[in-house]
Length: 501
Length: 98
Picture 1 (cartoon, rainbow over the protein chains, first blue to last red):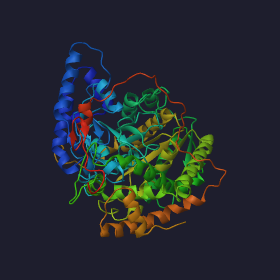
Picture 2 (picture 1 turned 180 degrees about the horizontal axis):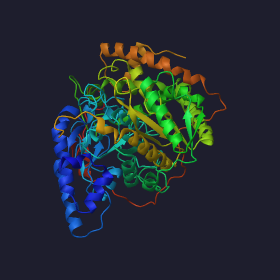
Picture 3 (picture 1 turned 90 degrees about the horizontal axis):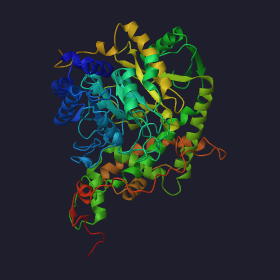
Picture 4 (picture 1 turned 90 degrees about the vertical axis):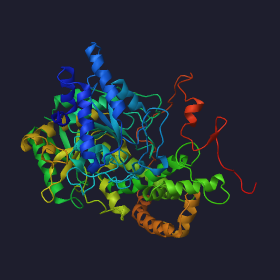
């Protein structure tokens, strides 16, 4: 049965439909794996054993009765603990929501339930998705399955590590500045940030509303496409939700074709500041794409140098507003200070005790950027830079169908290494942030291991807004070319964990 | 472009309703000064001719039909509240000295 945990979601779906394995067996195998290895990984904040098994048993009964089922029915999934779920706690990785249960499901959770996918549990993250390492979680960091002394990326390190450690075949993440893609890169997994508005944000606890996007996390490009089709589509409860149909993403991943496509290398997302081993693997991927018939062109996006600065004005501004609701009144923690407890003193004490350092930093920074006298110089200017970045992308997509870059400038760093240097931590997202500012889709897939440290390197693909299918089409080709050079998936080279058989 | 100092941080923390100890204010002021210094170039990039983008993919006139949808019951809405009474959220005094 341990083999079941190594199968892709697509392979599990085939076996389930053929009746070779039951949904209960598949779900139990993953729950067993979680029990065996999660003590050292800490990917899960909550394990949803009973509900997952009951959904799986329902799928098995329905299949026996000949009911029509979704192809992914019975394929289990993990959910980032930023997405609200009935019947399970949702903490956002924060003390301020410890023990809180949502009275409603996020739209993406309703869709998982409609497809009858057992939810294995909720995964760890940097508090309110603010961070690049999961070290800002109030519940302890998640560890990278490739090296337990290293970070799994963030904020969605829990979802990426769960998938990399074979605790789940699929997971949901959220990506505001790279929180799906950077963890994917450093754990050797696949992750996709869809076009802004392509997946409903209803029920995703808001960090920066104009940047946040829910997306799939998986071990293969096809699996992300399968999950993307489940969660995508218009939702009237999210007023930024696009009315476009989801598109034929699975078909694009199965087709996988790059011949005659123009693939643009972004000059500004390479070179200085990028680890040598990352650049070597990146160049190899370009050669493989060229050998498959793609035309590699160079594009320039000169305003990307201001993207990080604009992001660290826009994101904290929106976050400081969104996090005002954690005031000890309607939900979550309430701390009543000594003396005469007015509501104002309760708020101050609650937010002091309930928020961690990084959240406080961003709230203060956002409050600063939005304050009278600074608004135009900071928030207003950052929004103009956003326009310039969109124009850079528009010009680049005039020369190329898809853009490509390393996902993260380095491989996974050691736990604690950047914790005391917020700015160094922010630089991890330099290659992923432009896509969020412009609202375009991005995908990361494993590009091999860096020579100097033997750790995974991520390759990022970017497409114009609403052209998510192109990511799957190109990603599937590159994945298959790379795997034939490695003789199998990259994760087959990951060290065995305790409990691995 | 203005710098950020300890007094600013104390003021901002009051605005944001986050109590901070003296140590925390010192540390936060140092960290934020570095961050603000690194992002202030943003204010010098774009001229008046560049329009601001607030939303990456702008949509306009997003309406739904004016019918009652699903709503939370009073009980469900109060479920996560730290304190409640008579079907309402209960909070400490709003004003001092009463």
